[in-house]
Length: 469
Image (cartoon, rainbow, N blue to C red; front, side, top):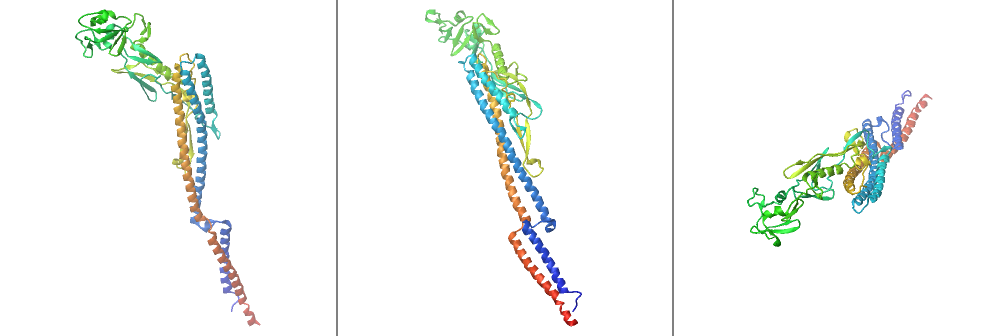
C-alpha cells in the first residue's frame, strides 16, 4: 500500500473533472439556447452559421428596402392619380370650349379654370416627396423634351420620330373638297376648259387624253344649278338641250359645273392670294396647302414653350403631299432615377431601378395652353395636347404599378429565403433542449457518482493507519 500516489483518487478526480466540464458546457447550452457559444464548440459550424446570419440579416433589410420602395412608388402613383383627374377635367373643359355655341367670354371663364388646374398640377409636381426626396419634379440637370406633333384634325396620316413628324395627305386636284380648321374648301378651276378637264369630259369630238371622255348625246351637265342635256344634232334652249360646244358660252368666270356627281367651280375675276373674293371657300391648291401648313404648325406648337413647331412646304408626289413638321420643344428636368437594393449581396442584379419623369405642366405639354379664342379652334387643338398629357401620365402610372407588383413578388421571395435560411441556421446553432437535457441529466448523475468515488478513493488510504499502529 502507498500513500504518495493514490491512483484511484487521481482517476476519479480526472473523470470528475471531465464530467464537470461537460456539465458546464451543457449548462451553458441550456441557459443560452445555443449549442455553439464559442468557436471551440464547433469551428466549422460557427463559420457556416455566421455566413447564414449575414445573409438572413441582409435579406431582412432587403425586404424592408423593398417595402420602403413600395411606399415611395405608391406616394408618386397616388399623386399622379390626382394629376390624371385634373387632366380629365381639363379635357372636358377643352371639349366644351371647342363648341361653337360658346362666346368668347364663355371661353375666357373656361380658361380661368384651366389656368387653376395647370397651376395645381405644377404644385403637385413641385411638392410631392417621400423621405425628403421629391418624386415628380425630376432629377438634377435639364434636358430638351420634344412636344408631340398633331394633325390638327386634317384628313391624312401623321407619323413621328424623335425630332420631326410627317403629315401625309392626298394630293388635291381641281374640284376636290378638303376641310381645314373646320371650314370646307374647294379647289377651283382657272377656266371653264380646266373645269371640264377636272370633270373628265371634253367638248371635243376626239379627246387627246384617253382619261377624258367626249360628251355625247344624252349626257346631262348642270351649269350654275340648271341641267342641260347634250344633243349633238341641235340646240333647243327651251328644252334645255344644247350642243357640247355651247357649254363654253353658257359657263364662264364664277360658274359651277356638275357632271356625273362631281362639281367644279371656276374662279371669278376677283381672286387674291389664291382665294376667290366672291366665294372665300373656293381656293387654289397652293392656298390650300398653305392653310394646311398653318394649321399643322398651330396644332403642333401647343405646349412648346421653348421652341415652336415649324412646318416645311409639302413634298408633292403623284397622289400624295407630305408636310414635314419639326417638333417644338420644352426645357424640362432630367428623369428622376433611384435604385432599390433588394438583396443581401453587392450584385447589381439585386437593384431594381425606378424612373419617374418630370410631371409638371411644362413637361406634360400643357403649359400656357389657351382655349379662349373667338373661334374655338385653339380649344380643338388643345384636346390633342391634353390627350398626349393623359397618355404620358398613364404610361408613368403603368410603369410605377409594374414596379410595385415586382417589388411585392421580391418581398415574398425574400421572406421565403429568410425563413428557410433561418431554419437551416437554427439547426446548426440552436440547442436541442430535449436532447441536451438528457445529456445534462447524465452528466449530473456522473458528477455525483464521481464525487462519491473520489471520496471512497480518498478513504482507501486510511487503512495504512492500522498498519502503522
